[in-house]
Image (cartoon, rainbow, N blue to C red):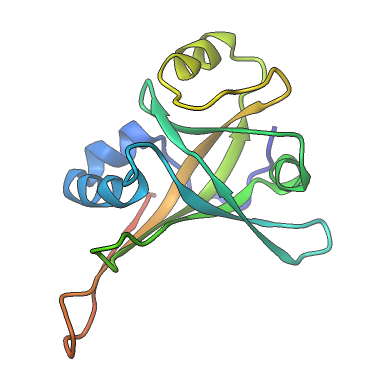
Length: 159
């Protein structure tokens, strides 16, 4: 189980969606642009340095999840849980979506694993660990066009 990094509560995807539906709608368009989830996961190594890795997040039963192979990024999440997840840009849109919070390993939740596998477009090995990304804050940046200032929307978990 990941450790808590502060007293501020992190929320599930469903709670985030309920709290900020317009932000979730716009952010989902960016995070799930290629027809499935794709983003860059930033973790903090044991030595304190950042690591950035591409992942394929998914939504299942109101949870933001990813299957992660046994790699240094999984060990980072197991050790301290801190993460940031950033969307990639598309060919036509420069907008950005970022989530940050605490990751929780869901190794024992076989039901959630099965539900998540049913809708996942990629092959997932038995050694892949299901990780839930709880959300503490979100940032959506819209770039309206050349010469215009970017427009930012920030959300933080209540509490």
